[in-house]
Length: 142
Image 1 (cartoon, one colour):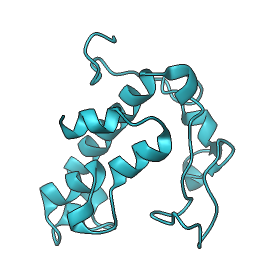
Image 2 (cartoon, rainbow, N blue to C red):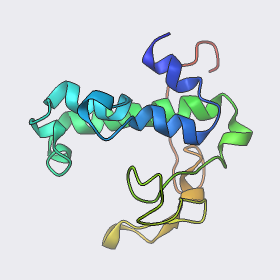
Image 3 (cartoon, rainbow, N blue to C red):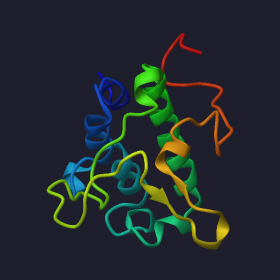
Image 4 (cartoon, rainbow, N blue to C red):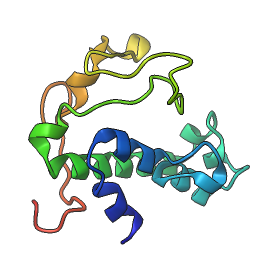
């Protein structure tokens, strides 16, 4: 089974997130961190939390992560449009810094747009988002 298949086989968002994010070290990185470190290395631009958005591949990498996310949701869309959990702060699974994300959790982009909630962004085809992918990682689904 490849990494994408392992990711898509997760039963709920909590496990999906753990597989995508992996652990806090280079050796334990998941699909997300693996893309950053695989391109930029530990000390390269893509491996730097603050500098990586200035690398053009950053956006392709994150768009593909979004496609993996939508592919996973599409496997059980009714359930997964409301399946969200996990810590507010990255890797804070013990909730020492804050609680867990909920559908009502606000998303802020400063002066660029009004605040929305996580629920507003769960369906890429509706609400504030309006896009789709030509191909998903699920053969024969679309």
